[in-house]
Image (cartoon, rainbow, N blue to C red; front, top):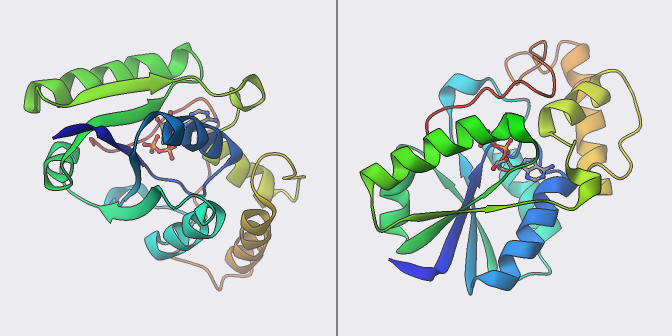
Length: 186
Ligand code: ADP
Protein backbone atom coordinates (compact mmCIF):
# COMPACT_ATOMS: atom_id res chain seq x y z
CA UNK A 1 0.00 0.00 0.00
CA UNK A 2 1.56 3.27 -1.12
CA UNK A 3 1.11 6.73 0.32
CA UNK A 4 1.63 8.11 -3.19
CA UNK A 5 -1.72 6.59 -4.16
CA UNK A 6 -4.82 8.11 -2.55
CA UNK A 7 -8.51 7.33 -2.80
CA UNK A 8 -11.14 10.05 -2.55
CA UNK A 9 -14.36 8.13 -1.88
CA UNK A 10 -17.86 9.55 -1.91
CA UNK A 11 -21.30 9.61 -3.44
CA UNK A 12 -20.66 12.54 -5.81
CA UNK A 13 -24.41 12.90 -6.44
CA UNK A 14 -23.48 15.05 -8.35
CA UNK A 15 -19.87 16.32 -8.28
CA UNK A 16 -19.78 19.89 -6.96
CA UNK A 17 -17.18 22.66 -7.06
CA UNK A 18 -16.40 21.73 -3.44
CA UNK A 19 -15.43 18.22 -4.49
CA UNK A 20 -13.37 19.70 -7.33
CA UNK A 21 -11.58 22.04 -4.93
CA UNK A 22 -10.56 19.04 -2.85
CA UNK A 23 -9.54 17.00 -5.90
CA UNK A 24 -7.39 19.87 -7.13
CA UNK A 25 -5.62 20.04 -3.76
CA UNK A 26 -5.30 16.25 -3.57
CA UNK A 27 -3.87 15.80 -7.03
CA UNK A 28 -0.97 18.07 -6.13
CA UNK A 29 -0.20 15.99 -3.05
CA UNK A 30 -0.37 12.48 -4.46
CA UNK A 31 1.06 10.87 -7.59
CA UNK A 32 -2.19 9.14 -8.31
CA UNK A 33 -5.62 10.09 -7.02
CA UNK A 34 -8.56 7.73 -7.44
CA UNK A 35 -11.97 9.38 -7.16
CA UNK A 36 -14.08 6.39 -6.14
CA UNK A 37 -17.86 6.51 -6.47
CA UNK A 38 -19.60 4.37 -3.90
CA UNK A 39 -22.18 2.05 -5.36
CA UNK A 40 -24.61 2.23 -2.48
CA UNK A 41 -27.95 0.56 -2.95
CA UNK A 42 -29.33 2.02 0.27
CA UNK A 43 -28.92 5.71 -0.52
CA UNK A 44 -31.57 6.46 -3.13
CA UNK A 45 -29.40 8.75 -5.27
CA UNK A 46 -30.63 11.29 -7.81
CA UNK A 47 -28.10 10.20 -10.46
CA UNK A 48 -27.18 6.63 -11.33
CA UNK A 49 -23.60 5.52 -10.67
CA UNK A 50 -22.94 5.59 -14.41
CA UNK A 51 -24.19 9.18 -14.71
CA UNK A 52 -22.09 10.26 -11.72
CA UNK A 53 -18.99 8.62 -13.22
CA UNK A 54 -19.66 10.24 -16.61
CA UNK A 55 -19.93 13.71 -15.04
CA UNK A 56 -16.75 13.20 -13.00
CA UNK A 57 -14.80 11.97 -16.05
CA UNK A 58 -16.05 14.94 -18.05
CA UNK A 59 -14.98 17.55 -15.49
CA UNK A 60 -11.70 15.81 -14.61
CA UNK A 61 -10.50 15.04 -18.11
CA UNK A 62 -7.77 17.68 -18.00
CA UNK A 63 -6.07 15.89 -15.09
CA UNK A 64 -4.66 12.53 -16.27
CA UNK A 65 -3.28 11.73 -12.80
CA UNK A 66 -6.85 11.62 -11.49
CA UNK A 67 -8.77 8.40 -12.13
CA UNK A 68 -12.50 7.85 -11.68
CA UNK A 69 -13.62 4.42 -10.52
CA UNK A 70 -16.55 2.72 -8.79
CA UNK A 71 -16.41 0.56 -5.70
CA UNK A 72 -18.72 -1.27 -3.37
CA UNK A 73 -18.18 -3.15 -0.16
CA UNK A 74 -15.64 -2.06 2.41
CA UNK A 75 -13.40 0.84 1.52
CA UNK A 76 -10.41 -0.88 3.17
CA UNK A 77 -10.80 -3.86 0.83
CA UNK A 78 -10.95 -1.55 -2.16
CA UNK A 79 -7.87 0.36 -0.91
CA UNK A 80 -5.91 -2.88 -0.57
CA UNK A 81 -6.95 -3.94 -4.07
CA UNK A 82 -5.77 -0.59 -5.49
CA UNK A 83 -2.57 -0.54 -3.31
CA UNK A 84 -3.64 2.86 -1.97
CA UNK A 85 -2.24 3.92 1.41
CA UNK A 86 -4.31 7.09 1.86
CA UNK A 87 -7.99 7.96 2.07
CA UNK A 88 -8.73 11.59 1.29
CA UNK A 89 -11.81 13.19 2.88
CA UNK A 90 -13.07 16.74 3.16
CA UNK A 91 -14.17 18.51 6.31
CA UNK A 92 -16.33 21.56 5.89
CA UNK A 93 -17.72 22.34 9.33
CA UNK A 94 -17.79 20.85 12.80
CA UNK A 95 -20.89 18.91 11.73
CA UNK A 96 -18.72 16.79 9.39
CA UNK A 97 -16.18 16.00 12.09
CA UNK A 98 -17.96 13.44 14.21
CA UNK A 99 -18.93 11.14 11.38
CA UNK A 100 -15.57 11.51 9.64
CA UNK A 101 -13.67 10.77 12.85
CA UNK A 102 -15.71 7.65 13.50
CA UNK A 103 -15.21 6.40 9.96
CA UNK A 104 -11.48 7.16 9.91
CA UNK A 105 -10.88 5.39 13.23
CA UNK A 106 -12.89 2.38 12.13
CA UNK A 107 -10.99 2.18 8.87
CA UNK A 108 -7.72 2.39 10.81
CA UNK A 109 -8.86 -0.45 13.04
CA UNK A 110 -9.73 -2.54 9.99
CA UNK A 111 -6.50 -1.67 8.16
CA UNK A 112 -3.75 -0.01 10.24
CA UNK A 113 -1.62 0.68 7.14
CA UNK A 114 -4.29 2.98 5.74
CA UNK A 115 -4.11 6.67 6.71
CA UNK A 116 -7.00 9.12 6.38
CA UNK A 117 -6.01 12.62 5.31
CA UNK A 118 -8.52 15.43 5.87
CA UNK A 119 -8.48 18.55 3.79
CA UNK A 120 -10.34 21.83 4.10
CA UNK A 121 -11.92 23.30 0.99
CA UNK A 122 -11.55 26.93 0.01
CA UNK A 123 -13.90 29.15 2.01
CA UNK A 124 -16.49 29.65 -0.74
CA UNK A 125 -17.08 25.89 -0.73
CA UNK A 126 -17.28 25.37 3.02
CA UNK A 127 -21.09 25.59 2.99
CA UNK A 128 -21.59 23.66 -0.25
CA UNK A 129 -22.98 20.15 -0.35
CA UNK A 130 -24.36 17.93 -3.10
CA UNK A 131 -27.64 17.62 -1.18
CA UNK A 132 -28.04 21.41 -1.05
CA UNK A 133 -27.27 21.66 -4.76
CA UNK A 134 -29.93 19.02 -5.54
CA UNK A 135 -32.39 20.98 -3.45
CA UNK A 136 -31.67 24.25 -5.28
CA UNK A 137 -32.03 22.47 -8.64
CA UNK A 138 -35.39 20.99 -7.63
CA UNK A 139 -36.73 24.45 -6.90
CA UNK A 140 -35.21 25.99 -10.03
CA UNK A 141 -32.66 28.14 -8.21
CA UNK A 142 -29.32 29.33 -9.63
CA UNK A 143 -26.49 26.78 -9.73
CA UNK A 144 -23.68 29.03 -10.99
CA UNK A 145 -20.57 28.73 -8.88
CA UNK A 146 -21.80 25.58 -7.15
CA UNK A 147 -21.33 23.00 -9.90
CA UNK A 148 -19.54 23.00 -13.27
CA UNK A 149 -21.80 24.22 -16.12
CA UNK A 150 -22.10 20.76 -17.69
CA UNK A 151 -23.22 19.29 -14.34
CA UNK A 152 -25.73 22.12 -13.90
CA UNK A 153 -27.31 21.29 -17.26
CA UNK A 154 -27.61 17.61 -16.37
CA UNK A 155 -29.07 18.51 -12.99
CA UNK A 156 -31.74 20.69 -14.56
CA UNK A 157 -32.62 17.99 -17.08
CA UNK A 158 -32.76 15.37 -14.34
CA UNK A 159 -35.03 17.29 -11.97
CA UNK A 160 -37.39 18.20 -14.82
CA UNK A 161 -37.58 14.52 -15.80
CA UNK A 162 -38.08 13.47 -12.19
CA UNK A 163 -40.82 16.06 -11.69
CA UNK A 164 -42.69 14.90 -14.79
CA UNK A 165 -42.64 11.36 -13.45
CA UNK A 166 -40.28 9.96 -16.06
CA UNK A 167 -37.46 9.72 -13.57
CA UNK A 168 -39.26 7.83 -10.86
CA UNK A 169 -36.90 5.37 -9.31
CA UNK A 170 -33.91 7.52 -10.18
CA UNK A 171 -34.25 9.69 -7.12
CA UNK A 172 -36.46 12.56 -6.14
CA UNK A 173 -36.63 11.89 -2.44
CA UNK A 174 -37.42 14.85 -0.21
CA UNK A 175 -34.10 16.04 1.04
CA UNK A 176 -33.04 16.10 4.64
CA UNK A 177 -31.26 19.42 4.17
CA UNK A 178 -27.66 20.46 3.89
CA UNK A 179 -26.49 19.72 7.39
CA UNK A 180 -27.75 16.20 7.73
CA UNK A 181 -25.26 13.59 6.57
CA UNK A 182 -26.82 10.35 5.48
CA UNK A 183 -24.30 7.83 4.34
CA UNK A 184 -23.26 4.25 4.34
CA UNK A 185 -20.28 2.81 6.15
CA UNK A 186 -17.39 3.19 3.80
P1 ADP B 1 -20.40 11.01 1.12
O1 ADP B 1 -21.73 10.39 0.89
O2 ADP B 1 -19.28 10.07 1.33
O3 ADP B 1 -20.39 12.14 2.13
P2 ADP B 1 -20.06 13.12 -0.71
O4 ADP B 1 -20.02 13.07 -2.18
O5 ADP B 1 -21.17 13.91 -0.08
O6 ADP B 1 -20.09 11.64 -0.28
O7 ADP B 1 -18.70 13.66 -0.11
C1 ADP B 1 -17.49 13.01 -0.37
C2 ADP B 1 -16.40 13.70 0.41
O8 ADP B 1 -16.26 15.03 -0.05
C3 ADP B 1 -16.63 13.81 1.92
O9 ADP B 1 -15.40 13.70 2.58
C4 ADP B 1 -17.18 15.19 2.09
O10 ADP B 1 -16.90 15.71 3.36
C5 ADP B 1 -16.38 15.92 1.03
N1 ADP B 1 -17.06 17.11 0.57
C6 ADP B 1 -18.30 17.23 0.07
N2 ADP B 1 -18.59 18.51 -0.25
C7 ADP B 1 -17.49 19.22 0.07
C8 ADP B 1 -17.14 20.59 0.02
N3 ADP B 1 -17.99 21.53 -0.38
N4 ADP B 1 -15.91 20.94 0.43
C9 ADP B 1 -15.05 20.01 0.88
N5 ADP B 1 -15.30 18.72 0.98
C10 ADP B 1 -16.51 18.32 0.58
